[in-house]
Every structure is written in C-alpha cells, then in structure tokens.
Image 1 (spheres, rainbow, N blue to C red):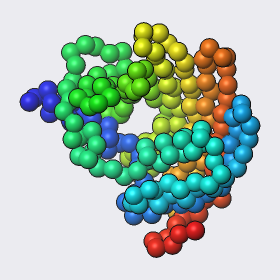
Image 2: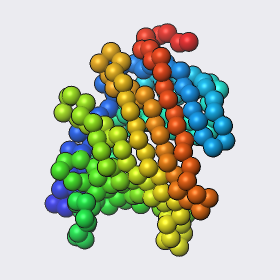
Image 3: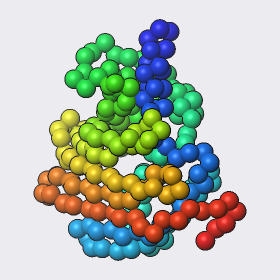
Length: 213
C-alpha cells in the first residue's frame, strides 16, 4: 500500500504541474499548413473541448491529422483520477538516471520516470514494439504549470533493437490567455535516413458555446 501511495503521489504531482487547457476554455479554430517529404498542404481545424469528437479537421493528410490530435489530447483537462490515477502502479527499486521510475498495470505496460515533480520520460508498448519519450525542455505557462517544448522519441523493434528516433520542437501562442499549439517540427532518423516534417497553425480564433463552423 505504501509503495502504491508513493507512486500515486509522485505521478499526481507531475500531472498537476503539466499544462492543460482551462475547463472554461471551449476550444479554437485555426488554419493549418504542413510540409512532409511527400509534399505540402493546408487545411483547417476546429477544436471543441468537451465534445465526444473534440477535433474536426478538413483537408489534412494523415501525419498532420495525427499530430494535431496528439497535441490536443495531451493538453485536454482530464482529471488525474480518470486517467493514470485509476490504474494500479508502483515505484520500482531499480535506479534510473533521470529520476524515479513508476510502472503501471495497464494494457501498454506503461512506465514513467518522474524527476523534480515533473515527468522526465514515458515508455509504452504498442503493436509489438516499444517507444520512449524523453522530455528535454519545457516552457512555464505562468500558472505554476509547464508545457513541453522539446522532446525526443526512441522506437525499438520486437528484438529490442533501436529502429528509429524522432526529435520534436513545439511552439505555442496565446489565445485569450490560453496557450494553444502554434507549430510542431519533427526530425526523424531511421533506416531511410533523415527526414523533416512541419506543422504550423495560424489565424487562431476562440469558439463559442453552441456555435459550430
């Protein structure tokens, strides 16, 4: 019980120090431009927080669509009790260079590394492979929370060999006092070499309750 309580205390503090959209923020619309090795394009997004389908996009390719949904999901104001707080967990005895390691009993065999009250790394298993996200830089949001701005992701195959790595750089902008995504750049290294992908959001506008474009 003590180990579980310690794990929950560590992870709850890290959750509370991560920036999320205020519950009073209903969402936004924006223009999107992207660039990948396959070409460039533009589209639009409408984010309506609290809806069953909070992200609606138009004319986006799969990569841009997936990145945008990930950005919104990680900033959504989900209570700790409805996420990691509902899963059994423990602090491991093994030492980790980045901080305290916490294992979760979820379907993805997730683990976190927490350091100085913030999440330093996340590891999950999916589709027969494993990936680890390591946070390298954060921006203070001004309310005691922080939003990650630079991080890297390492991917391992079924045999444990490193198959790819990605370096992320995110920027944000203020919309009515709320930090919303402004850009994401991803540099990937794999067996095909280096590639760069960019996503840029502009012309942000807040949505109103009951209004839909």
